[in-house]
Image (tube, rainbow, N blue to C red; front, side, top):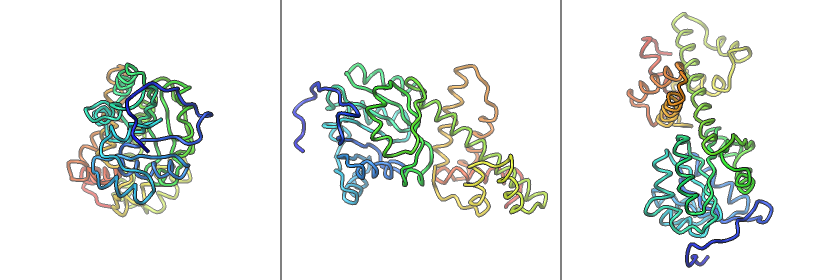
Length: 313
């Protein structure tokens, strides 16, 4: 496609007026690399960018999209720009920095941030894009890499309903459930609360397993009973087995979970709302990171629980 000559205004596309969109997808980590595949398979033209250029080139070669040298190049002709990076500063840099995607994007471009960032960051970035006549949704996801791979993520969206309607064909391609959480920033806040509950639940499972081991309980029996009763949860189903094997194959990095819990606590502090269990989860994650498990799956917080108890599963 020839590059656009300049960033000029254009009619805002709607979900019903276009079947195929030009999409810039920025960030090809564990989640993004899997999510972007579904956009290609849905028939959209996808231009990808990643900090490591070789990653973008390899992805484009395998899945049929294009690789851009900069985020600005990726966003030049995009109807929608999707970001899936680590935190708020990275989102701001790849969208609004010197080589950011908004640099050459036409007026009316829709930016959909699927990263997990602070609600205040979402609102600030939305305001800055709005000054340029551009639109923004915060649309973080939950489900980890297996659901990213099979396109069954849950996506929580903050922003205006018309913008959600416009983005829905893309979101539906990547997820099986799309929830409008409210105005800008509310998608981000719902995600932080959800992840914090997951971290607390994981800590609870880890403590129960260690307590069971210390008291001589048959852990198979414990997991079976808990899984069929009021102690059951998705976290128990997903994490108890790997914890018992000390298998921390990364589905969601401990460092990323720690970041999310910290952000949740900051938002709660600003609102004057205590969340003491979140503080306990943060401390366990910090201890897990201190033991060298920051890049491992967040189930590695078990290491901190074992260390405190002097018990090894």
